[in-house]
Amino acid sequence: MLTHPTLDKLHALKLTGMASALADQSATPDITELSFEERLGLLVDREMTERDNRRLTSRLRRAGLRHTAVLEDLDYRNSRGLDKGLIQSLASCQWVKEHLNVLITGPTGVGKTWLACALAHKACRGGYTAQYVRLTRLLRELTITKGDGQYPKLLANLAKVDVLILDDWGLMKLSAENRRDLLEVLEDRYGRRSTIATSQLPIEEWHDAIGDATLADAILDRLVHNAYKINLRGESMRKRQAKLTGTTASE
Image (cartoon, rainbow, N blue to C red; front, side):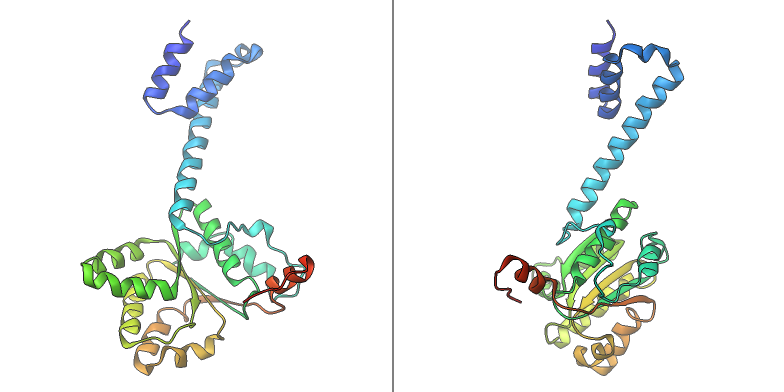
């Protein structure tokens, strides 16, 4: 007789996990064989699980990852330069806890962005926040926000993200303003948060690509020297898929 009023109260308290578990228990004939403490423990476990799932869903939504990628789906069979031991180490998210970076380089189509998103997804599952941005769009957005007064707010938001993906590093020629903005972003994060950068350019070419020796030194000092480095190689996965489907791959 008390089940329905109790369910209503649990929903009113937003304890939806406990409400679902209580409903399941009510429909289980032999549930009375469990003690009160055991039944209560099951209710609490369901509530914790549902809350954890909601928080994870929220973190992934805010992250805006380009790919729905998980490290468990990583294919080591193709020779792409993947070190399984390193990936397993990164999967522990200790690098996020220690505020270290990950730099992923290689030719187009080898899975750089996919791997970056998989690492960020793992971090979200570990309770950390993440955000995906293409560097070219971020730099344009930083310029725009200077005109509407949102520049400090955007920098503050970027500084709070536990794992920030800067995709397609080095694709555009940087202006003096771009270099200063990039330094601001990395300075706020250095030693406090983790950054993943992907690039078609080898790391040794990043200095010249930045375009100003002094600012390049400052930017790379905050990005490269405390980073794990992954250099992918092999044929473009998009081209390989095109061969399988008989379509024409475009870069």
